[in-house]
Length: 215
Image 1 (tube, rainbow, N blue to C red):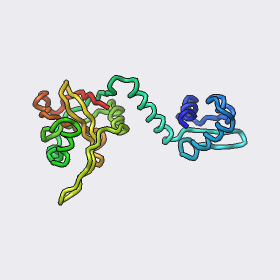
Image 2: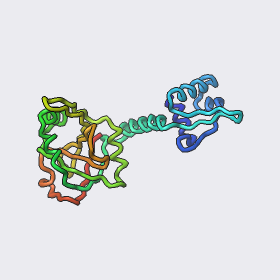
Image 3: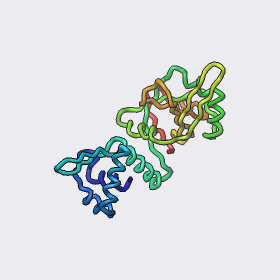
């Protein structure tokens, strides 16, 4: 189905309604008329395209679900052809309310950080506010699988899953941590490290840092 979806996308069907006959599609994908018609029906049934049949012809547009599938395929190819699969995100340092220190210090998380990330974090996080022009790369982290830090329960409460990405700031190893459920807005990132990054890098509120994230 991806082949057909790609062919439709190349006709700009992600941005506009495209008129295409099954015969034309068959020629584009090098398949029989029957196969092309069947694949269009399958795409429609999966909700990957919206298709309308009228007396004037067949009209197709790729849905958001279809675009997401194409985007995932695109991201997979980027990983294949890019070195190490890294991105860089700039963020502005700001002071949090101390919640990061509490969560990072919990044994249920701390043990997994050490096992899965290879270090025991300093009890606290470096909080970064991502500017609007950098949000494309921030959104990419939501699309990526990352490293799963599993949730756990204590006698008092339950703590949710966290997605982590190894990263570097000025050559210092660390990790971005993104709680699956958080009250923080999406433009906020939290970074953990085996050292206190503020002191090590001489950072203060309002400073900008560049984080190299390993996908």
